[in-house]
Amino acid sequence: MSEIYTLSNKNGDNIELLLRQGTAGPSALEISPLYNNKGLLAFDPGFVSTASCESSITYIDGDQGILRYRGYPIEQLAAKSNFLEVAYLLIHGELPTRDQLSKFENIIIHHTMIKETMRNFFNGFHYNAHPMAVMIGVVGSMSAFYHDSIDIHDPKHREVSAHRLIAKMPTIAAACYKHSVSEPIMYPQNDLDYCGNFLHMMFSTPCEPFIPSKLAIEAMNLLFILHADHEQNASTSTVRMAGSSGANPFACIAAGIASLWGPAHGGANEAVLKMLKEIGDVSNIDKYIARAKDKNDSFRLMGFGHRVYRNFDPRATIIRNMCHKVLKETSDGNNPMFELALKLEEVALKDQYFIERKLYPNVDFYSGIIYRALNIPTNMFTVMFAIARTVGWVAHWMEMIADPSQRIGRPRQLYTGSVERNYVPMNKR
Figure (cartoon, rainbow, N blue to C red):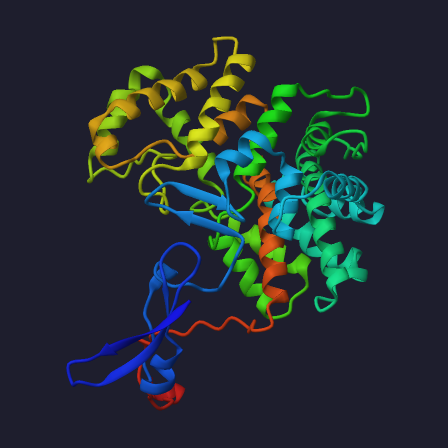
């Protein structure tokens, strides 16, 4: 549905803009006539009030704490689905039949291996390089190893590239970790499921296989579902922007990984662990709570509140129970960091300062604690995020490429530099 919205200025000049309505959420003004007819630009730093595209993949209502994938509430998917079923849903738009899911899982399983020449590529990185730095380079290089599927105008090529990215990302991620600890890169096992296979590649060695617990696989599966997509966030917007130029899918996903690496985006759960380390002990909680309330103090409680969710993060509500289950199974009662995290959660949930400001623990608070309990090293936290979010990135990339009205992204600017001036010779400066 659409209607005409008329803007007027103090001089009585009118301009008619198309008011476009989606199936849910705020309507959007199509503002291109502002520049075409009046020579005006919209100024919106951070794009907080700008719809950069039209999408049917994910819907968020931050005020009501709603997150839906293709219309399905995240609560239902987290309770009843698994990661590869959610991946199919995000890419294809509908939940799969039993046969469709079986075929999809089989395709993903048989795409998990990477080429031997690509395995050798890891040897070119410094021995202690950050896993995210390695991941960006390796994923970006996939267009050199898998250049038989990078014709973005061929629907079959797009599908093959999507399958390869989803399937190989855990293999690449685990290899990034193995390289960082100077251990042999492990091959995937086709008899394991998606999350179990990843944990196998992370922690097995040629000397001794690693058999993950059912709870570890369940927790990983839940985390991947909750992180699979989150609408037009920084990294997804980066993938779309890169893709709008016609870049190949592997380059676009590598660009998304680079954006995700930023501490304000994918590094939030790592920041939670650093904060807990700084607080140090349960006896220091009151002091740090007081510091967090002091606007003149630079200390901030990481993992509380969210830019989009003004009420509560629905993902945090889901993951909280899993966090407590994992800690109960993996902790022997003598882990001060876990004890500190749970006590901090308890104090913050009862403190009126945080309640009034709706600063509840978010998904990053709990995900970092779970990863730590599963022995995932801190420098791998953002890599874990990238594995899951690859599904969302691929879905958005495919949606954008298939859109016949798609154009190259080209934001404008409000110029505030020098006006025209003449060149001054060196001897007169």
